[in-house]
Image (cartoon, rainbow, N blue to C red; front, side, top):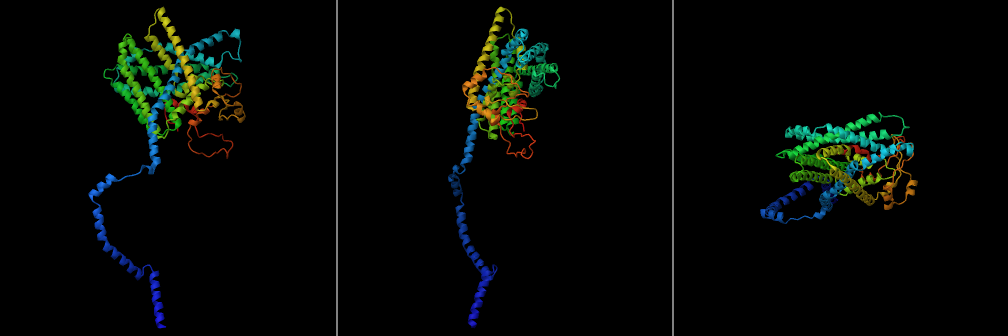
Length: 550
């Protein structure tokens, strides 16, 4: 019995030693383990030290490998970015080429079709007792706007005769290079501000002159608006003349330092644009601003060449002297635009296909201006979209051409008439080609059905409602025959108490959502819904500034 008790006591002690983590049995086992580890450590350490030799390190550096497919998505994205940068120049120049001819078409309209339309409007006004009134109006709204444009053009042309170009040239040439550089930068900013506010002045004049008489008078009157429009066109023409004179001084400087500084100013634009966040809408605004700027620079170069050729008695050899400087200005402008757009699309993850969408949007506006429910002239649409107002530039060009080219004799006047018919031919051909290309771009973008959607009625303070599904069902499918028939038909006035506006739904795919937002109209039905996407036509007045709109 005593032996059994002793054995059970030993078992309990062993069990207690195992249960306690800090017991003497566990401590002995741990100590023995570390003693064995210490006995093996010198041998392992010596082997590890022998492996860390200089030869083995160099061998590992020369032979080590890695697998790029382990991060395949990252490298594919980087490759697509490179391909996008390589595609940007081609896609951008396509848009610039199309936009350039849009501006050219609006610019030629002032010299060719606008005088003829004004003449027809005067004939209509003179023959009014014989023909009678149509729709209760003496003249149609489009004819009133044409007469306003023609009268403004004539008045500003005669006012420009009081501006001495020679005195302005010598006054600017007497300034220092740095001062001229600052003046040129100030003129660029002033030109954008003038263009932004000037189109609003002209639109206010057109609407005041054509507003239905039954409406309540809520304006200053036609005459004050007309004087404001004349003053704006005259001041803007003088501003562009100072720009052209400064550029002419830069061309005629001996060391070309001023021209070099002015061209380097274009590269400063890269710094102010590339490192900003851009959405598709903002990039569209910048693209339109670049189109307008490039076309304006071409007209300024034409004015500079005309003034220089006049001073050298139209010697063709002097044209080759100006040719390198003209090429430098054009090349620097193209290079800056390409680099700027390439890095903007790279930093903001925008594909090169977006320029095709921009081109389709411009084409949609061109085709829409030929519809029966058109609410504006095409030249005014280009002015609002790109900030290009052709009236001040046309006034200046007419003034420079008439002062540089002397017309004397019957043969000279015959050449002027032939030149005018040549401009009309160029305008008609350009319009036909642009219209055909625009119909093709609209069809490729699958936007032709939106051309025939009825314009929604809009009231002040409310957003236009979408067309009913019944009207959409009655439209049916559209073809190229419908487009060609619609763009050649005359617009008709629609009887409605509220003004009719064409909603450009083609730009919806150009907008980028700011994020998913909660529809608060469910809680408060009195609030009008407002989409997070900004329609491009709602922000046209900021286009010419080229700044990002938050």
